[in-house]
Image 1 (cartoon, rainbow, N blue to C red):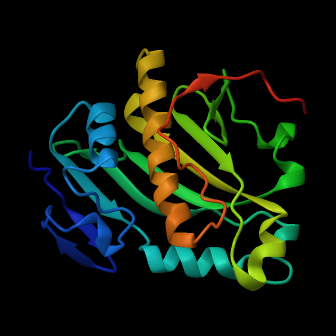
Image 2 (cartoon, rainbow, N blue to C red; image 1 turned 45 degrees about the horizontal axis):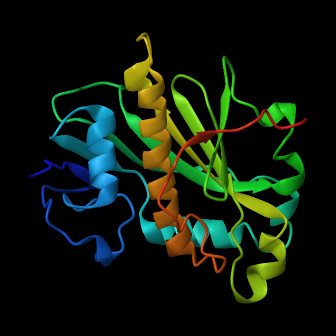
Length: 214
């Protein structure tokens, strides 16, 4: 099954959908990968357009820099990585992914809660909150070497925003599919960052969880 890709990164485009996942580009998904399958199920389309805002090197450099002195005292501005849409869809309707660090002490605060009707889930060691269009995942990531101490003060945060769902009657199945896709993509980000605690190693099983205390 061929997935049509229109990839934009630093002004370059490519329609190569056969590049192996092992090449290290987080956003580019091999057609036979679990991430690609989860995305196609979420979008309900075989042909998907991919736009890349930042590559894997941008992610690792930015996230590591935020763990230098001063970083754990504030949240890292989320780095937008990639967006996906059915190939024939135009405009701002898409699924987009971003990653950042979140101070552990602020993880359960009211300020960090998504707007609207929010449901809470656990998937492996990750905590997830989701409304009808946005899913946000947090998980510990123990970084190697000199960054280990700083990484213990933060959580890896990933967010998927799905504007394709705006104005629609969103089913629980769709939310579960979006969380599954976000989990698999966050696993790729964790591997790129070198998280030594191997978070998100298990097969994703989305389960409801109690609302966390503020």
